[in-house]
Image (cartoon, rainbow, N blue to C red; front, side):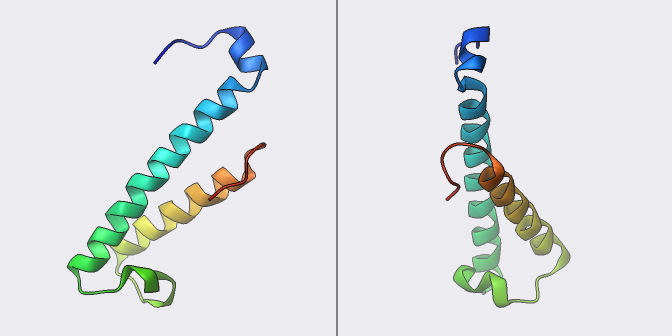
Amino acid sequence: MFPMTDSDESSGGAEEYRRTRLEEKLRIVDQQLRSELRARGFDPDQDDNLALTAPLAKLYSEREELREELESLPGKSGK
């Protein structure tokens, strides 16, 4: 990637870069959680209704924190 300049930051480049990084991290954590749920025989679409073990709960919590952080960023709304 190219280094950012002051003009990039003033035009919102820093926020867009941060948003892109958060979206990528969210995608990775979501995929990992879904994979771990499937490996344990759970339906990933039911993750809100499951009593999760500590490792799964940690992934779930991390995913939700990333979603909240994305939604709090100015500009485009989170997914």
